[in-house]
Image 1 (cartoon, rainbow, N blue to C red):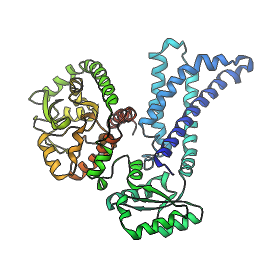
Image 2 (image 1 turned 180 degrees about the horizontal axis):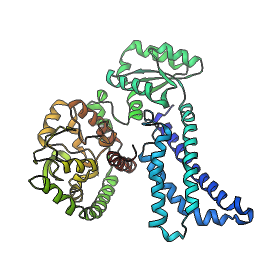
Image 3 (image 1 turned 45 degrees about the vertical axis):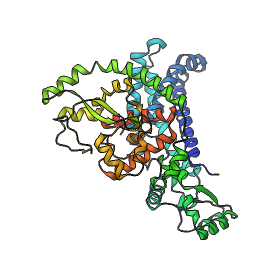
Image 4 (image 1 turned 135 degrees about the vertical axis):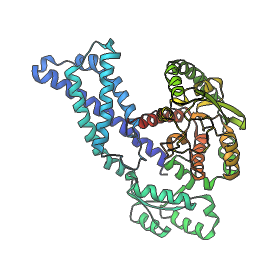
Length: 453
C-alpha cells in the first residue's frame, strides 16, 4: 500500500542525510586545501580532521540543520520556494555563518580552535555544495514520490483542496487527478501507479462499488480518503467528522504517561523561562506606560480544559484592555509598542506563569474568549471538542494555518480551518509533534522580525 505520510518522512530523512554529507564534504575540502595542497601529504593527518575539527563542526552542522528545518526546507509539502533556491539558501547561509562565528569565537573556546581560514573556506564550500545538492535533489525527490493517476472521491470542499495542492506542489506534479475510474484503470494497465481515494460514505452507492471492485483486479490501489487527506495536509477533513468519527478517533485515546511527562516538562521549562523573562519586564512595562495610560499587565477570561474559566496573563498591546475576539491585522487600537510586542510575541511572556500554574500547557489549542467560544460552539459543529485537552501557549493551528500575520482567526471560515488543525493535534499529539510545533513557533517568530523569510 502506498503510504504518503511514510514517504514524506523518508524523503525528509534523505534531505537530512544529504545535508549532513554536504557539510562534512565541505569541511574535508576546506581542510584539504588548507593543509594538504600547500604542504604536501606529510602535513595531513587524520587527527587534524577527526580530533581537532569534526566534533566542534558536527555541533555546528546540527545547529545549521535546525535552521534549515525552521526555514521549511525539510518539508516536501511546501508549494515551491518563496524565493529562488539560491536566494533562499543565501539568506539562510548568512544566519548559519553568524552562528558558526559566534560558536567558535564566543561560546566554545573549549575546543582550542579558531578556524579563521578554515571557516572562510568551509562557508564558501558549504554554500556551493548545499546549493548543488538541493538543486539536484528536487527532481530526484519528485521522481521518488512516483507518478500516476489518482481518482479521488470525497467531500467537495476537501476535494478542491487536494486538486489545488496536486496542481501547484512540485513534489506531486507527476500525479494527475483524473475525472473517472476508467482513466485510472487505463493508467494501471499502462504500468503507471494508479489509486482510488475514497471515503467510506462513497461506498454506499452500489454502482460505485461495482466500478471500484472491477478496478481492484487491475492492480489499482484503494486509499482511505480521510487518511490520505490527513497525510497530505496534516489536518482533519471536517466534512467527514461526525459522532462516530469522534468516538473512534478521540474518545478512545489514553495518554496518561504522555500527559504526566508533558506536565513535568511544562513546570521545569516555564519556571526557568519565567525567571529569565523577568529581565525583560523592566523594559516592557515602562515602554507600555509611557505610550498610553492603563495597566501594563492585565488578565483575560478564557475557556480552559473542560470548559472551565481561566484567566490568561498578558502585556497590554492596545489603548484599552477590552479586546475583541476577532483578529484584525490593522486594528487602530493597537499601540506602537503593542505592534512590536505582538510581532515578537513578547506580549505573551506573562503566560509562562499560566503554564507554571497548570492553566495551560506550552502546546495545545489556543483558548478562546468565553462569550466567543459560546457563539462558535453554536455555529461550528463539534467545536467544543477543542476543550477536551488543556489549551496551549502555542498550537498546531497557529503554526500551520495561513494567516501568519495574526495569532487568531478573523472569520468563521478561518475558525473552521483552525478546528481542523486542532482535531489533528488532539488525535495525533505526541512528544515529536509537540517538538515540531515549538520549532515551527520559533520559525514563525523569527519570520515576523525578518529572519528566515
